[in-house]
Picture: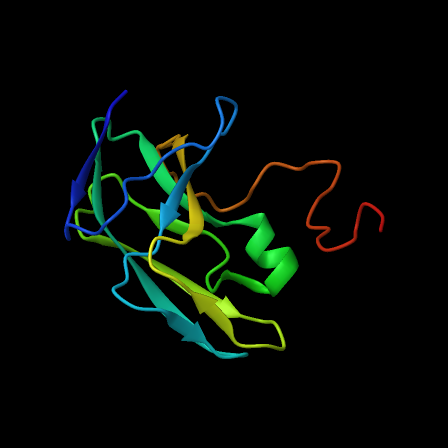
Length: 145
């Protein structure tokens, strides 16, 4: 499979894997100056790139970088970003600062990771009743804590 990457600005850094075993490609902030996210604030951060996978049966998922989340309280505002295979706009990363201190993002800083994931697209069917299961409608905590 191939993932086409278009730089929207010359200072944009192309996504790259940090090790041969990395599942994700690091996304970097495309900034001309530092950006400070105050505690409690959410800011969409530019990556300066647009993407195009050569397959329609994949989704591009954007996850927080674990170090930013655990060390600084900075994570994705929407949990996981979903980039559909037919989206051609700029990849923006909505970061939220859940920490107690302002967080400074510098130009080129790695801010998120992109994981390419296959998608199953089932045929949908409306029914009047679902088949029984051992679990039934038991939800949160129904199988134990």
